Image (tube, rainbow, N blue to C red; front, side, top):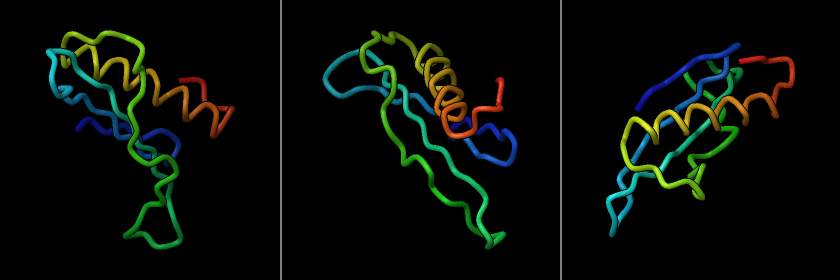
Amino acid sequence: MPIKTVDGYEIDYTAERLEGCDDWGAYVAVFAPSDNPMHMNNLVPKKRVAADVALTSEAMAEQEAEKAAMEILRQLKPEIKS
């Protein structure tokens, strides 16, 4: 599962093979720091994104997941550019 950290937010984005077909799903979760240094707050639980796009490879799904994750982060924190 690729992980990217942007301004203290941890973005987990991944690709998973979809059941019953050859396509891939793109999934995202977003975490933020908490008062406890051993814990992160789960702001956006793992969810499927880009469900309306046919993703035929793991790389395509990861790329779509990363793109969607950055858009979610921009909605949470508008000053983030990319």
